[in-house]
Amino acid sequence: MKRSTKNNLKTLTLLVVILVVFIKTNWRAQDRLHEILFDLHHQNKPTYSKQAISDVLATLQTMTYDELDGEYLEYTKSANPKYKPLLKDLTYYKVTRNDLYKRVVGPFRLKQFMCKDEYYIDCVLGKEEFVPCPIHPKLFYKTLELLDELNRLGYNEDGFVIASGHRHPAYNEKIGGAKLSRHIKGEAVDISIYDIDGDSYTDKRDKQIVLDILDQTIIKDKGGIGLYPGTDNVHYDVRGTKARWNSF
Image 1 (cartoon, rainbow, N blue to C red):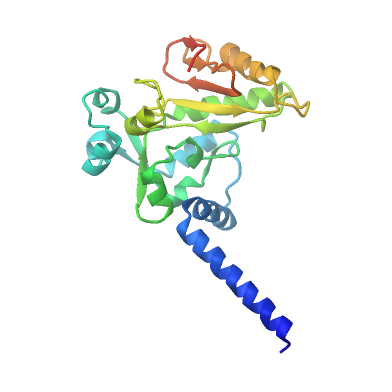
Image 2: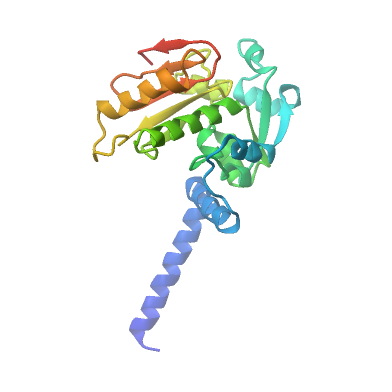
């Protein structure tokens, strides 16, 4: 074997070793790898009907607040007297590693609505069997309605991404969220808006289109909308009563 060929093989072997080590030690890399493998082994098509959303949610096991592990309650501050009244009547989904990658509404996966904390990371790494997550089904339905309305009006329904969904109390405190944020109950989502009108630019018009649709058609007087001025982000929630605000 020629010397150059041997050197090439050594280089290739070294690169493979480095890649394997990187994947094994980097949870984000493993997260992406599991996502790819899940799609290869499952029919994981985008979900564009309320029935399809319900079918996905029906595959998840559930648990009550009283069934939550003590360690989880302590880690997330969910047993804190300030938060327990908000959480004690919620239903929690037991989201396994495979469940993370299921498309639950449109192209969006369940993981995109979840808190990226240590429990999430340990689930990706196979150290936790599941992550408890109390996401309200209405949040998925309203997101579907937003996708449908953008499509109906001729806008780019792929022009936004999920920036934040459920945040347990400890994580919400860590990032400086509102004390009684609807994210804590899994009733809210923040989205980042890009090119909605299809002109190849992201500007105020794109955000205003989404805000108008949410205010006039999707959320109306049955939830909250946060405008987050100076950013491309928008908050909406399914609290059941009307709320609007201009600040973080």
